[in-house]
Length: 231
Image (cartoon, rainbow, N blue to C red; front, side, top):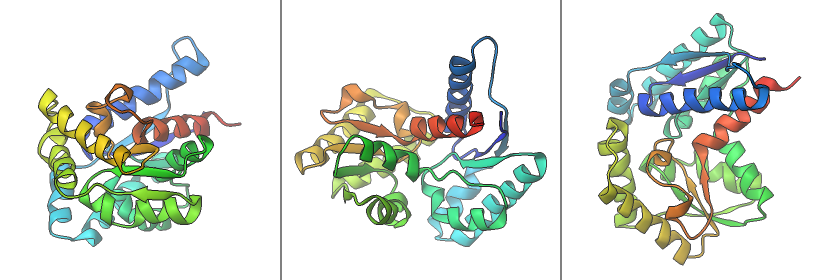
C-alpha cells in the first residue's frame, strides 16, 4: 500500500472527513482491521483565508509547497490537497515535488464523462467558480460545458462556505439555500451539479437535488484509494 500525503487544515472539518473516508474505504476493500497509510500536514486555515482575501496567492502557494516538500521527505508516495479552492496553486505544488499530485478535478470529471453527461453546474467558492483552474480543466481536457451560479446564488454559496461550513456550522436554513442554488442550475440545463467545495458534502446529498450530484471530496478519496492500492 502506498503512503498518501494529505495537505489539510483547509478547513480541518474537511480534513477529518478525508481521514475517515480514506480509512473506511481501505478497510472495506481489504477487510479486517486494515487502514490507510497516510501522512497529514495540517495548515492553519486562518493564514490561508487571509491571503486569499488579500489576493496573495503567491503566499498560499509558498505554504502549500512547503507542506508538500515536508510530506515527500516524510515518505509520501503521492499527494492530495484536501480543498478545491487552493488547487489554484496546484501546478506550483506539483512543480516543487517529484511525487504525483492527484488533482481534485480529474476524478470528478472522469465520473461525469462516464455518466455520459455534457452540461454540468458548478458550486464552490468565488475563487473556484471564477479562478479558471476548475472550469478550464473541465472544458479543455474533458469537453464539458459548465454552468456557473448567478447573482444571489453565487454569493450564498461563497458565504455558506466561509462563514459557516469552515467553522463547522451546519443548519437547515443553510441547506435550503444550497438546494435553491442547485435547483436553479438544473433549471438552466445542468444535467448534474458538481459540489466544488470539499465542505459542501457536509450539508447536501443526493436527496437535495433532482439531478446527480458529483461530490469532489468522495470522488477524490476514491481515486486516492485506487492509487494507493494499485500494484
